[in-house]
Structure formats: C-alpha cells, structure tokens
Amino acid sequence: MENMDPLAQLRDIHLPQAVGFWPLAWGWWVLLILLVLGVLAIILLYRRYRQRNRYRAAALNALQRATAAVQQDQQIATYLQQLSIILRRAALSGCHQVYQPNLHGEAWLRWLDDQCPETRQGFSQGVGRALLTGPYEPAPQADVEALHQLASLWLQKHRNQWQKAASIPSEKTLLPSRAQPAAASSGEARDA
Image (cartoon, rainbow, N blue to C red):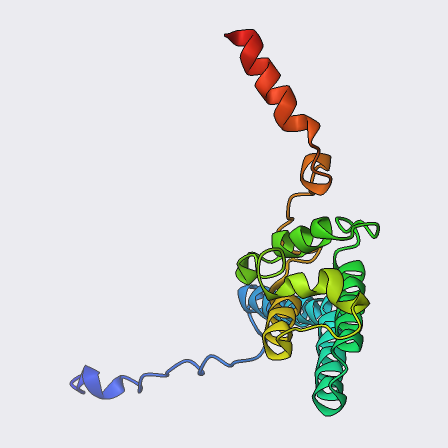
C-alpha cells in the first residue's frame, strides 16, 4: 500500500460560497442614505420653487383674462387699469422687500424696467408708457398686443426677492430733482 499514488489521495478543491448581496457593507448603506437624502432635497427645493413662483402663474392667468376681455369689448382704458393692478400685485407678492407701494409715474415704470432687464426699457421708454396716462383718458390709444407681450415678459422674467437681488432704487432715481444739475454745475464753477 505504500506504493499507492499520492496524487490519488488528494481531495477535490472546495470553492468558497458565493458572496451574497445581503447584508450590505457599510459603504453601500452610506451611499443609499445619501441618495435618499439627495432625492428628498431635490423634491423639497422643487416644491419651494413652485410655491414661491405661484404668484407668477396667477398673474399670467389674470393677464390672459384681461387681454381676452379687451379684445372683445375694446375698453382699452379698463385694460390699462387692470394691467397696472396685475403688475402691482405681482410686484407686491414677489418683490415685497424691494417694492415700494408708493411708486407711481416715471419711477414706477423705471422700477419695472430695473427688475427685469429683458424688457429693454419697454416700460419707461416703450409701449409701457401707456400705463402713465392711458387709464385716465376717455379713449386712450395703446398697442394691446405689444403691452400684453411686455407685461407677460415681465411677469415671467422679473427677479423676485428669492433670486439675485436687484438694486433698490435710490431717491435720486425715484424723484429726479432739478436742483441736482445746478448743484453739479455750481461745484464745477467752484473748482474752476
């Protein structure tokens, strides 16, 4: 028996059991928790964004109704009044930290342009000037379609209080004074 082949006495190789998926290693638990927290954060940020911009959708709906009404009855003065109210409500809802409710006239139109550079001075130098005197005239002339596009652009693109802050207009831009140029020219005279 001593002459037996020693290789015949060897047993087959025993492979270890396959590594199971469960229980997870601690690194996978951390990754899973981070993934769940990331999804929750995205959902909460989206809901907050929608809630903060809900006033925009309401104002755009009111603008659509006002535009449809003016196309039916051609009451442009009423349309201009409603447009001014819609813009002021949107400004109060979305920009209440930088909006000054006592703005009127040229200062109001400049403020609208300052809050939305995409309007390209459409309120203070373009068709938006109809908001100054149009609501008070018996038969105002205004381009309703251009006003609708301008107001719609402002409602969609203006910066609200949660976005990049626009500069708060100073008294110099709100209330232009005739004394300012005279003071500057008198200062130049003193320097000469």
